Image (tube, rainbow, N blue to C red; front, side, top):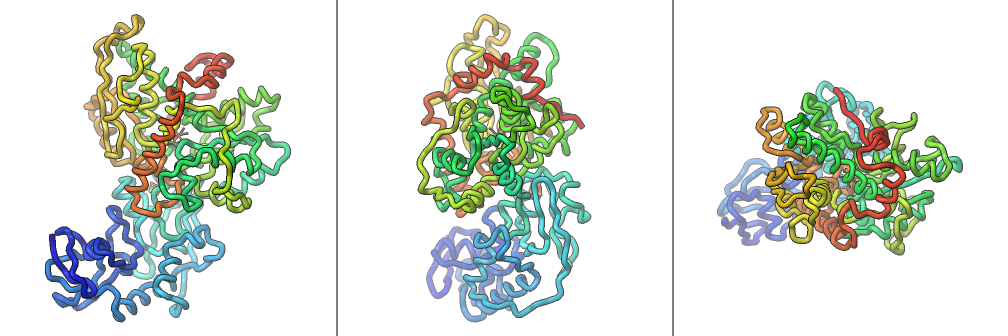
Length: 587
Ligand code: HC0
Ligand code: SF4
């Protein structure tokens, strides 16, 4: 613990704190722009400058970079500091494309809010500006003219995701944040995880909008438009309307989608239950082959996160066989809607239009992939992020907070608790185990409240060993076998697990990977956190588990609506499943 004086006030802080942390800990606010606790401490914007009176320092100090020391005397808001901050802001502004009124971040822009806070009311430096082209890919839209060079995106992409797509090139006024060699982002190994979008303080990085095409479809009398929201959307959408993180709004979500004019309001969760049956069956097939001395690629790895698919394709293409052949739940769902459900309605696949609401930016690229088509049409036509859905609800004049709680429609709207937990890291694995363990042993998964506690949490890699005992007669060969599983989210952990596989040292049989740290709850399409991201992640995680625990049915194989579907469709892993619900990634 150290003692220092900030603005004449005696303050204490843990040794090793920065001046910024010491001030905040003592209730003293320092304006800042580029700083992101634990992710980005770079001193790029210099908005957080303070004057160090003792020991005297010649220049103002970036408080996010300088360690607080015993006996320091600091002033955070004297005239000199205020003046410097304003100048810094005005310089950034001079190089910023100020189309604020028509910017996707209007009134939700950290740069805009900071100008107001600092009292900047004009921009005196109007320098020459180079107009740079806007870079549009399936998932992401980059507008370098709005970039303020804070480098948060660079830190997230390099340090958190280890993907290293974005860098700062050139110097001085020529500096740009860009993929290497100025390539369009769609020509790089970008995973489209969108973690860079979440931390962008301005409108320089955003999802490529699908709002217009969805509106057109809703208003097209020849289209039967089906909507499906992902598990994590229900714990995200409330934040678009000012509710605190961790609020679960499933009922209002269904109500809003009804008001928007979709013909059927179904649920991706139904597709998640379907995925468990398909993926569980696939795992059991691979497992049985290995038990009987045959060949099958293990560990099997989950395949529902499209950012993760991009990652493995770019970085470990020789291990694509480890991926489950399952399409992701919303893609399976789209395939079912345009075949099985279309037939029930007497419609052709091309008369159907499927909209997925996803906490994810990579899903926009996923739905455009050639692997995600059947009968000559894409399984899913448009993907809206949770943020885009929030925007559309507002634009349609729907009072979200005043909506009643409604249910999803039949027959593809019912889901179990196992589906809800898909939205959080570890959830797909737990949902799969709830079913697979029961198939092998005839008993419920032996964990309190059905939660596989060793894999519940937010640590980078979690693992568990499930011992199979007193198995059913047909699984005799598995008696005493220890199934080893691992779960990770974010590409830093994925890389570690992949390196083990590459070296032949992976002890696991089944691995879940989600591309975004924490899983879909903090996907690249979720509302930007209004408080520390770790707190937000924790609260959304608890909300997802809460939703699961409130459900009467909590295992995918007990989803009655799904079982009715299989009576007509065939069984998991049948020919129709392989044609519509599975795919193969090849490099
Ligand atoms: Fe997810 Fe999904 S759980 S990827 O994290 O598997 O985006 O929420 O929709 O498809 O169900 C995201 C979330 C999904 C899919 C599901 C999976
Ligand atoms: Fe990096 Fe993900 Fe952004 Fe691509 S989408 S640039 S991988 S953070």
